[in-house]
Length: 213
Ligand code: PRT
Ligand code: MG
Image (cartoon, rainbow, N blue to C red; front, side, top):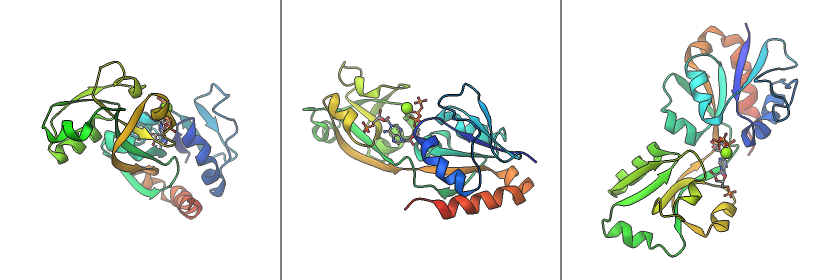
């Protein structure tokens, strides 16, 4: 039985290579330079499918991939239906933050009960965060470059991922609230785990013991 693993290019792929190696899996090609979306490995029974980061849970949910690696941000937005999430891989770490244009008095706006315009790629996370605080918000869904929204008056605040803080700084924004620490998790299709247990369990064990500190 073939084992299919869904991965995204970029930061998650780079940090996943050592974990795959620990499970004895070496990709036959580099997805950054190859245009192929299905990539073989040194193991005849293991293949990788290369998808958008936010599509990983969907491929695994429907069983088009048996395993996948996705950020907690993506998993919260997806909702996690049909997914078993056994291992926090401690990779692609960052923080989900609220940020505003420098000089915007966020705490005053929030305590005055003003209605806040919030631009984000993560409407679910943003909605939950502000609901828990009792802050009224209008969520504006964007697909990228959230940092631009407060600069051009589209929003008062953004909810976005921050790692070095360089992007906020370069755009005259500042983080004003921490929402969650984010890392990537291994996700498994629940039915596949039963049907392909003998193939999947050793991969889970290898990943678990190779998780970076
Ligand atoms: O890029 P694409 O639109 O295809 O998809 P994606 O952005 O969802 O994928 P990718 O590969 O960029 O991110 C995959 C996963 O990496 C995310 O789901 C997160 O779990 C995780 N991750 C870790 C990050 C970051 N760090 C990160 N810094 N994802 C995005 N960023 C972005 C952030 O949105 C902001 O624009 O980087 C910018 C901030 O970085 P700093 O270093 O300037 O603070
Ligand atoms: Mg990106």
